Image 1 (cartoon, rainbow, N blue to C red):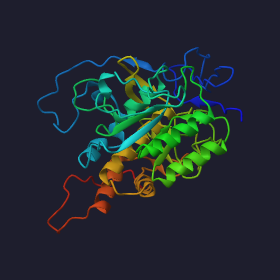
Image 2: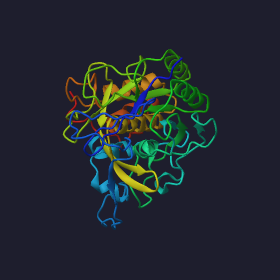
Image 3: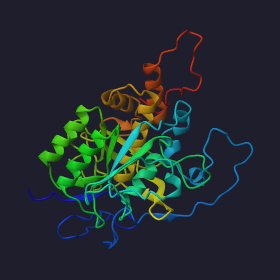
Image 4: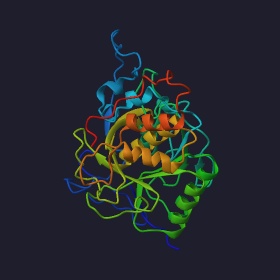
Length: 363
């Protein structure tokens, strides 16, 4: 069977670059002024975090990482309130099916577990492209280490599974292999920040296999700015994610529609292959963000099923418009719901003072 083409989903400063298998090509986004020769994911705006002493009066529960103070995405979803319930658990593993991950990045030290390279059929899923390292940072960059930024689930683990090559392209066969490998090796969440050019039965079967093992699967909706259903995001049981801005509006490049499960912040500072940082934008970034919140939720209730986690994320989402089925994910509401349903107090006196109040913007 011929390999299906796929596209990584990150937005360049001026152009959205979609690199596809076969004849490598690029096409501009709706807002693009010109096509770029750079592959998506390596073209985010570089960031140079400056180490600044934290004021003595600062909330000691907040991270001391410099990029935390300059970002909006985590505060938008009330992550600090969620972190009072849990900052994640190492046993909650997020498989990043992507271009691999740079294991040497300082902000990912202690985050990575054993992975797999389905492209080269070996156990070295190094990132020779850059996109996967950006995804990993949004999910689980380490917090309170005084450098860089913070992932949504900074104490969770990342399993790098390379299914996309250095040119930004991949095959359905490698994606099938990567999904099954991740499910068989302990992944609790699978993140897929790419879009394939058509539905593949083998990939669909692999997704169903992973779901049968209790894996929660998240995929980027796409950067076409249209309501066209994409694969694998549109597959039943997959949590599809679009991207929203700081005002909870949909980015013009973000795919949308009633088939999209959740929205999440579409731009976040993240780890860049080679040790740097970049402002990572696109539904790739939004999907990674939602995967991090899902992992945070699984940490709050380790026995909850994937369906229960998705229900909590959906019911707690802030309503933002008719471009998404539920709304924009809210980390505090999600973890509060799960921590209460998971572990009710032993007595009336056993209260949970750290649980957040309902979000004022929720309908």
